[in-house]
Each structure stands twice: as structure tokens, then as C-alpha cells.
Image (tube, rainbow, N blue to C red; front, top):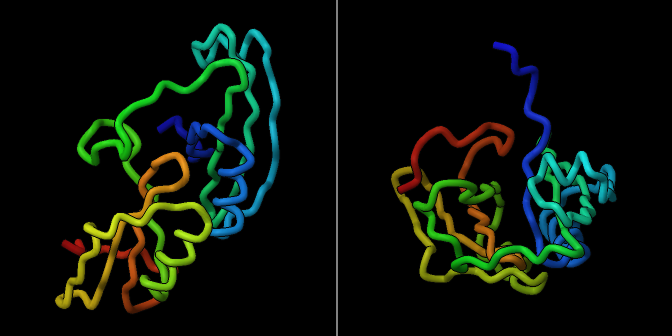
Length: 157
């Protein structure tokens, strides 16, 4: 296969500094680089003729997340939260050691926990809930036993 590696996942945000602080301070990502461009090649690639892009690249656990902000082109508003069954980006899943404390910390950092999504699964000794980041993107928070470095292979629901 000619694909060499996953490079990053892009997430358009309405307030770059707010989202940078949220993902850095509340979720533990670290900033690795920044890009500012309004070049014609970038505008062509993104299919935004007036694109004035500022992007911040963040990393955590081997995942690189690109926060994209467009100064001149306002992002199109859609349903919030975006329906989970709509094609495209659905969520970022994070393993946590204390679900309730994490939800409260994220609330203080600007997230919106969706209390009606909380679930307990005694079969897997797991609990989970959804919170929305400051732009309404879903964060799935999973509290489960075992090594956090191991992916959770069993379904929680």
C-alpha cells in the first residue's frame, strides 16, 4: 500500500486560542507547531478562495491534532452536537481514571458534559459519558480497568 503513515486529524474551531487552551490544559495535548498562511496553493487545496488560515498542531499519545481557524471565512454552522450517525468526524475517545472528576474538570475548562449519555456497563466494569468541547465536538470519556496504554477492544454498550 502506498500510504506511509497517518499525519494528523484536522478540527476546524471557531476560537483558536480557546480551543488550544482547552486541548492543551484540559486534555493534556502539547503544542508542537503553528502554521499561518493565506497562500494560493493552500486556498486551492482547502477549496476556500479567501482562506486566511492559522493552524496549531497538538500531540498526545502519538496522535497529532490540527486545530484550524479561518480569520476571513466563518465556519458554517451545523447542528450542535452533530448527530453521531452523520457521516464524517464523530468523536475523540479518551481513557480516564475517574469519570466523574474528569467530567467536572472539563466542565470548568469550558466543555459541556452531556449528562444523559452516562452509562455503566458492569459486564466490562466500565463507565462512559460524552462531553462536548467548546465548539460542540464530542469527546467520549471511558473509565475502565486495565492498562490505559492498551486499546479497549470490547464494546462498552
